[in-house]
Every structure is written in C-alpha cells, then in structure tokens.
Image 1: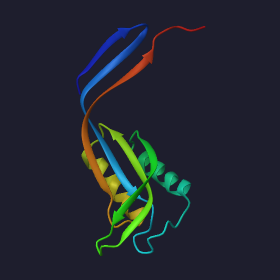
Image 2: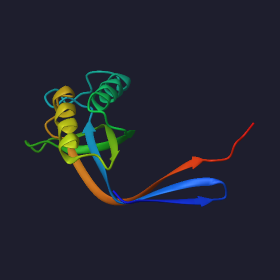
Image 3: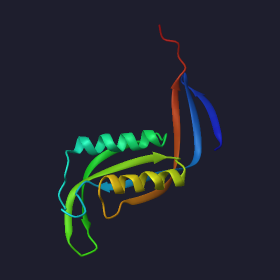
Length: 127
C-alpha cells in the first residue's frame, strides 16, 4: 500500500490509495424461524468477538432490510452491516462464514468498492 504524508494546518495527513472497502450484510432473523432469536446487542457482541479474533479493525451499523429466502418467502429484519477497510479477502470471507454460522443465516452478502481513505493525526503539542 502506497502511503504519502502531508502537513496541513498542524495535522499530519497520511493518505492511502486504492484501498478496498468491504461490507458484510448479516440479517438478524433466524433462517428457519424467520424471527430474531436474541436481542440485537447479543449479535453485536458476537460480531465484535469474531472481528477481534481475526485481528481486524471494523465499524458497523444496524439498519432495516428485507430478504427473499430460497423458497420465495419474504422477511423484513434488522440487518448488521459490518465495514472493513483494506482487509484481506480470505479474512473477510472467514468472518462472513463465521457470522453466517453463528447467526444461523441462509446467506450473508459481501460487497466491495474502491475507496480513498486517509488518517489524520494531531501533531500539535497541546498543554
């Protein structure tokens, strides 16, 4: 990964180009009962543990979504959207498989897009 650093108004900007943002979409309804079996915080705790065990930085949101099952039945449910920046594809797929199994899902969906991401570090010496 190419990195460039710039000093701008006392902040050190580290730019990284050509990074992949991966999102893993995981519904929270059980694949068989089609109902959410646990409270949302339990699913979030499991997701955090899975990401930590794979040594990946992440962010997430909970949103509402809908899903058509293989048998054609439609389900509306809460959906956990996990975002990973520049994570290894094999690690991403391992996380997706873990979440699919632990959350008892028919499928999870992975999307990928290219992003320009950068970090800002405050270089000012505040007293």
